[in-house]
Image (cartoon, rainbow, N blue to C red; front, side, top):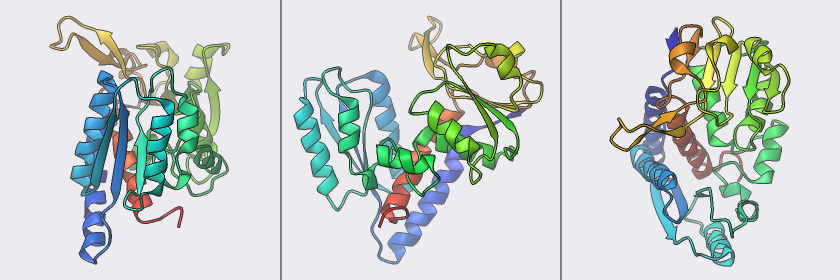
Length: 292
């Protein structure tokens, strides 16, 4: 069994990005600038944004953090988005999700200039991704593609099963895996209402679990030798841990690792790659790689 180490892979990619930034600045070019907007004090979001700021430092980027309290109005947040859209010093920015219930996440996403949408959530980027045009690809699917490529996992002609149909992971992942330039695989998408789900999973050469249910994928759902990518990161109560919880993936790692040919751990698998791919998108934004 091969352990697909996302932490080590992300570290290597960030070193590659930092080297590229050093080249750009050495010849007088502009240092890439990522801004992040954080609303409220959600623990997961706080940690995620903190890690993004640290990653910016590792990559040699400039970073800006803009904070609002939970009671910020939708109009105030949209005004912030408009300011960032107009700020030529900012190459790309994100609005950290989830947002408070009184704010329309979709309205905020659509207000972001797609040329600065380094999260890859804007309909223009999603649409361009779906038909294979250059764009910012959302970070988690892009990170999975990098993990598969950098660990030598053959995807062309293989049967890939994507477990989950979210807009952030499941749908874009399936689209990318079926496109010739990325996965070139035969793709099946499964979800909570799929019939014969266990049998369908067992047919997968590559199983990507993004269903948000801890330990859902068991050993009897995995074909011997399959590559298993675990996207899940759910906090599960654990009194033995200092914080009172542990992170659990969608895969029963201890049981599945004895069946799989390759597998990602949780934590240390897909998670570190997500932030790393945001850095890769920001570098592309700084170099005007996709949009002039």
